[in-house]
Each structure stands twice: as C-alpha cells, then as structure tokens.
Length: 499
Image (cartoon, rainbow, N blue to C red; front, side, top):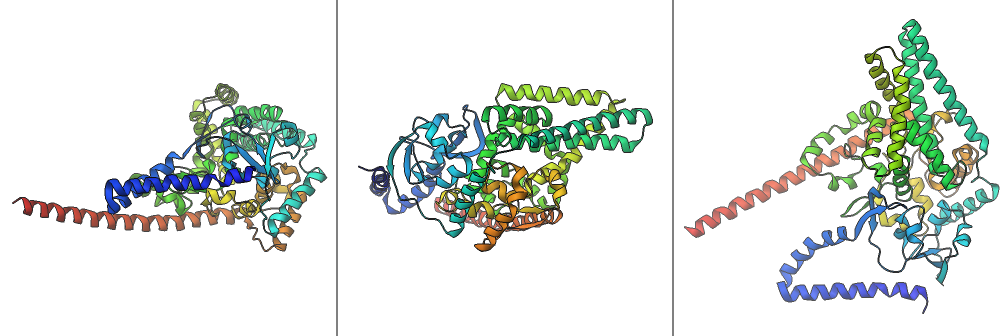
C-alpha cells in the first residue's frame, strides 16, 4: 500500500470517531444539550491539540504553538515522502519539522536548507506523490532560488565579516576616545557622541547576531553560532539561542495565529500593543484594553526609551541555558568597565540611559517591516505553492540609498530576506532588481516606502486596530449589560415563584 493512501485513510477514522462522540451526546443529553456541550468542548479540545514548540536541545520556545504529534513523521519534498520519524527529535531547527507532518514541504525545505542535505541524512523514502502545483509566481520563485544556488548567492565572502568587525573596532575606539576627551574637557557633545557609539555597537552587533544565527557568515552551524554568542550574548546582551529559536518560528509563520488558540509568531507579539484585529481575542482583558486605547501614541516612544532593554530582559527571563547566563555576565562586565571610566555615578547612569535611547532605533527597525502588514491563519501558510507570495505579503521594504545599507543592516530589503533566508545581506542589493521584476511580471505587490513613512504607517495602523478594539469593547459591554438584565429578570421571576 502506498504512503499516499495511508495518509488519506487517516481522515475517515477521525470522522468516525467524531460521529461516535455526537451519537453518544445525543443519547446522554438530547439534541439541545448536545449543541451546548459541543460549543463548550470544541475550543478546549483545539487548545489541547497544540503545545509549545521545542528547540533542538529541548528548550521551550515561548510564544510558539505546535500541533501535538503522534506516530510516524512523513515529510513531503519534491514528490517523495521521507520518513523523518527518528530524525525529528534531532532536527537542528527544533520540532518545527512536525508542522509539516504528512504535508508537502518542498518550498520550506528549499528556502531554509541546502538541497544536498537529504543525501547526507539518508532518510528512508516511503512513497511518492504528485507535487501540488503552485501559481506562476511560485514557479518563478523556484526558478530564481535554483538560479541563486547556481550563482553562489548562498555563499558569503569572508571579507564581509572582516569589514563588519572593523566597523565594531572603530566604534569601540569611538566610545573610549569620546569618554577620554569628555573627562578632559567636560563637553556635553563628546558625552553624547560616546553614548551614540555605544548604541551603534549594540545595533551593528545585533545585525551580526542575526547574520550568524542564520548561518550566513561561515555557513557552518556550529561555528556561526559561536560567533552569534559573541555578537549577540556578549556584545548586545541578548540570549542568542533564545532569539534564534523564536526567529525560526517567525520566518516560517510570519504574522500568524491559530484560530481559537492564540498567536503563533513569537517575535511579532507583545503584551503592550495589538497590531491586528486577529489578536484581539487573546488580549481581551479590561486592564490591558484600557492601555491599548493609546497604543498609537506610545509605540514609538516606548521603542526608543526601552525597546532594546526590554528585549534583553525578556531573553534572560525566558532562557534556561547556562551559556546565555554566562553571556549576560560577560556583557555586563564589558559595558560596566566602559561606564566605570566615567567620572561620576550620574554620568554613568545617564550615559547608559542615553545609549539605550539611541539604540531604540534598532527596535523600530526590527518591527516596522511587519507591524502594518496583514496577519493570517497559521495553517494557510502551509498551503503548497503559497510560500513566496505569503512572504511578500507579510513584509514591507524600506527604500534608502545604498550608502545607508549599513544603518539598516540589510534588513530594509526584507522581501529578499524572507523569500531567500539562506542568503547573506551582502547580496541583497545585487539581486533586488530581479525580485522587483519577478513581482511586477506576476502582478504581485511589493510594498516599499521610506523609513519615516513606514513608521507613520505603523502608527496609523495601530490607530485603526485600536478603533476595532474599541468597537469590540462596546459590543462586549452591550452583551454584558443584556446578560445582567436577563439574570435580574430571572432572579425576580424566581422570587415571585417562591412567594
């Protein structure tokens, strides 16, 4: 019996079980009570069908939602069913592989993996299937991905790393030099420039953490992650592996929710704002909704004042890895050594505070590419042939002259990064015209605007979602008042009956 038939036979069994449950309910409770029971149990049953995802080392990926897996794990790639049952728990990307159990994962596999990796893994082939056809845009993306592979776009010249490290050394010299001159002259402008240099170290190191955790620099997972520890944990103060685990989820399931369960993109959800009406049901609490009525006003100030600092705290409070704790100690050590060189305690505090204000720019940079873009149901992103179009739909590109690419860390050309996540940012400009042309040829909108306009769009979008939240509150208040009135009338009727 072919694997395809085995998979197709799963559905009738589930339906038969469901019919049995319904018949049982009819016998025990009657038709009317049966409906009430199903309504109550269905959301709970759906929530129980999901759990939090796990990283390769077993660490919990907070904010992720993983379907509970049972039995054989078959993954479809380019028309072949691969048995990944034993390999699943060793998958370097964690248990995200189970999202594609009994599904075609050709696009996701080609986007995130070297195509030769299947030969090295030697997974057993359990059958074949007809690869679901995508639209013309999907086919164009497949051809372009193969072209980039052939051209060596997924390799990075070592000179790129050297140039980034040189920038970090220059910035560190700037911090030390400005503090030294400030001590000698007391000029406030030197104090501010020193803080700006420290913020720039955090910003540029954050971009390098992103590069290395994507394996973009050395293209060796172990070696890249060692560099990621230096750039992320030590220099920025963010737990690099924690960030990587959440970022993997973000890339595959950008701006997604599981209906009735919760959001499933951990890097695009915060407790202090809602950027999509699809998120409203999961934040609907009186204390939270009052604050969210002002979200379009405090988004930018909060990012600037405490954005990076909150990410550092969040990463440390959600990691259990000892290596992340060691990295935090080293980060505090080198930053503390810099601050100790300042003459007074107030100088030390204000210098660190000012550096955090400047680094708030990084927080905004990391968010504007997605916050004003549409959210969708998670399962919809697994539809074969939809990968490339969904990646374009979920991102906003920031236009700027090439000499400013360093400032955005390459992430302003976000469509390239999401459609071709194996490619290092040093190639983005080189291939961008091809991406634009591909989108134009297939009438796919590639959303682009300047950085200031992108921020304005985010703020306006927050205001729009706030309006929908206000309408939801008003509706809920009306329903609550009606329910209270009904309960009062019922209570009054009970009193009359008793009398």
